[in-house]
Image (cartoon, rainbow, N blue to C red; front, top):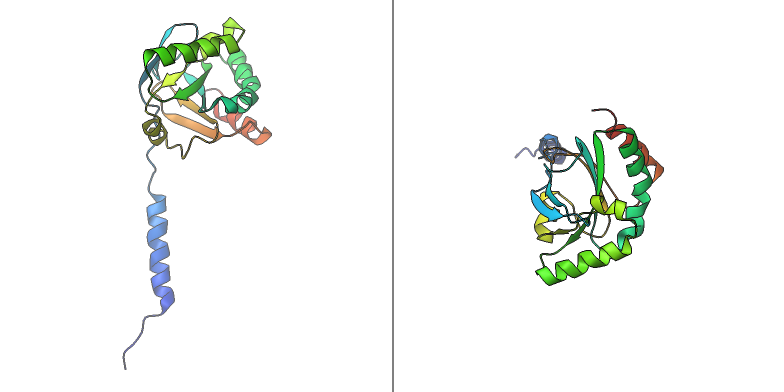
Length: 178
């Protein structure tokens, strides 16, 4: 008579393998090198040219996401005012476009942002959107993505969507003294 292995042995082996694969360290996302210009027309080399030791990057993909971007601003501004090694940037993401479109888009953003003091912290990026999403392991462009990065662009913390109290507390902890 042939002896059968219990079905749960196969299940246990499968779970052990899945657990071992899941335990493998995930590759840390790194912000890809990009050169752009802030709305105040200053050249910015990201990530190394950002002004903080840690920087909060509020990444948006559609104009309709501005309300969610705005929900992050009080916390970002508070951190920037209390931690001199911290800066925040708003990064609206666009596909690669010709010079005329880029000029039109940045001019429109300047007219929308009536306080010229904020222009320095808004850096539109014209990039290969799919590659950008892939490089930062962002699943889609349906929500604002907020990244805390170091000078080398390593993603230290992330969240998506509008600010909530839990996300604010988590950000404050992650952005604390480094």
